[in-house]
Image 1 (spheres, rainbow, N blue to C red):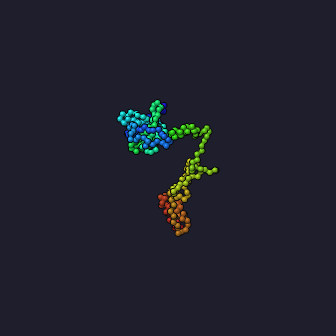
Image 2 (image 1 turned 90 degrees about the vertical axis):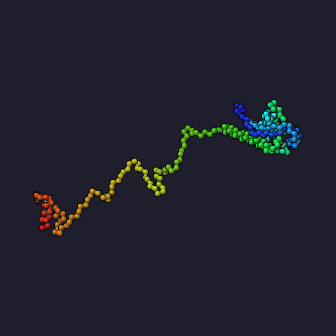
Image 3 (image 1 turned 180 degrees about the vertical axis):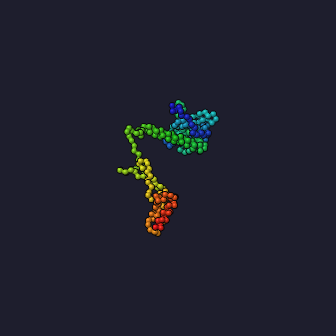
Length: 254
């Protein structure tokens, strides 16, 4: 199912490439482009590098019609499917395969050195991505096989939270926090929740109290208070003010 969902992407396209028949490798010293007939390529056309999943494909196509001439599946790079030559950076040896399983080695070359560089980097980038994907997949599988941590509370399990500035001493209540920065500090309300107003002090003056005026003293002796005593029974007639002052006069003449 995963293979059906994979799509083919184009990694590189080069319009000019030359194909050469190469002699068998004589020794382990590697391939040399100087052993080929570089001035007489066996085929010329267009090169396209595509990828589908983890496999890259080097396709040799006709420039005009786009007909496929040959293709080389690449499962690893560097590897046996693509090799560089010992005496040049513009030529490579690739292994082409047909649908029946037969394979052959041919030489390819680019006129421009930049095209050869792009060919090489495209394959390197693709297999670098393949390596990263493999590492990510491996890590994911390892994570799935590891035992999962159970962070839930067990039955009957409790936790204790410690909150700052709410600590109490043994045998006593917590102290109220004092205001800082010169502000007013308010004491907590009494336990009953009611506020009692204290009685007024004795030093507070009573506004309704009037001090009586002083009583003048007499030069004839006797008590000052006695001069102002009235005899209500001896003055049956007249106003109270008349008999009052008459009584005072009689007293002074005595």
